[in-house]
Length: 121
Image 1 (cartoon, one colour):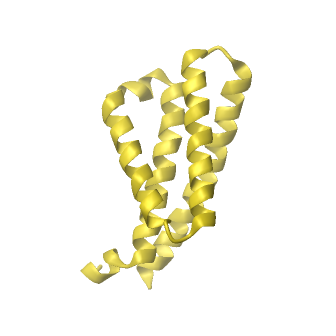
Image 2 (cartoon, rainbow, N blue to C red):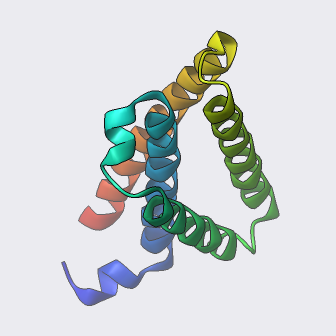
C-alpha cells in the first residue's frame, strides 16, 4: 500500500468511522463485562473515545446530516452507558445496550468491508 492510499480523504474518514464505532462498542462491552473494563484503564479509554469523537466531528464538518447522525448516536450510547453504570441491574437499560451493540456491529462490518474495497482500488 502506498502512502497516497492511506491519506485519501475517503479512506481516512472510513477508518475513523470504523474506529469510532469500535470504541462505542467497546464502551458498551466495558459496561456489560467487568473483565473487558479491566483491559484498559478507564481514563485511557475515555481519552481514546474523546479523541476519536473529535476526529469524526472534524472529518464530517462538511456533511451536516451524517455529522448529526454520528453525534446523536454518540450521545445516545454514552448516555445509556452512564445510566447503566449507575444502575447495573436495570434490565431494560441492559437490553437497550445490547441492541445498540448489535447495530454497531453491523455498521462496523459494513464499514470494514467498504474500507477493504477502498484500499484495494
